[in-house]
Image 1 (spheres, rainbow, N blue to C red):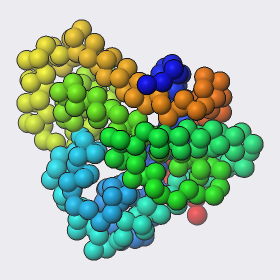
Image 2 (cartoon, rainbow, N blue to C red; image 1 turned 90 degrees about the vertical axis):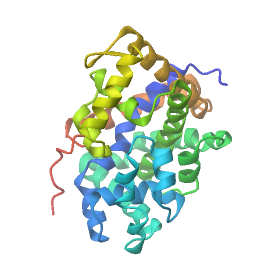
Image 3 (cartoon, rainbow, N blue to C red; image 1 turned 120 degrees about the vertical axis):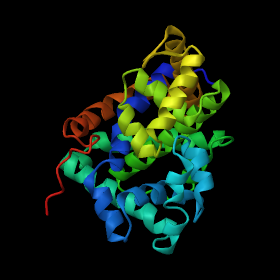
Length: 286
């Protein structure tokens, strides 16, 4: 599919990802959704799922993959009586803008940010040659690009995240791993908080426990930990996800990916250290 080493592309994505994903944790997002008359939880589904239009829960459940259907149905389609998809998407971009200004300040006007934005945009736009089977990426790719370099960088990384996520869902489906099971395996690896994943996606303790037992019966877990087979499965899933994500970065080549990673690293590190991805970031000053 690509001559680029998937590990090189993965590093470029990994080191830039906090610049995008922080928008789902920072108080600026809740503020802007609440200004539209909706909750932060509703804003998440409206802003990310709104790329499909004023849809019901089906497309969101299908593409987000790990949310319980009735969790999504609490918000969709009722939310569209209060806010339009376009307004929700605009609010998310405005939240990203405000949060990046708070976290990175004058750095946003640097040549390094402009260079990172140009590299990430090249990768994100090149991925349009691989639309098949990428519904969330394809829908987001039709959004208008922002003008400011730091928002171009955010938008590009958002597209690359959705491109990668679509591939990850394909890998999970092929492996026979449901959305709930994928979270349980992730938590069992020690890389995520299972309680947070379960509650935020709307699953009950009983459902979580039942799927844990199902994974134990497949030899993927022993107790609450992964078996060797479980670790092997997770490694294969990540490798397949990396392989499916790599075509977006082919246009950059090894050197371009390394440069994007180099430029993104200090920016992302600053946000992570400030708590922008933990929900612990302080409220935006007035």
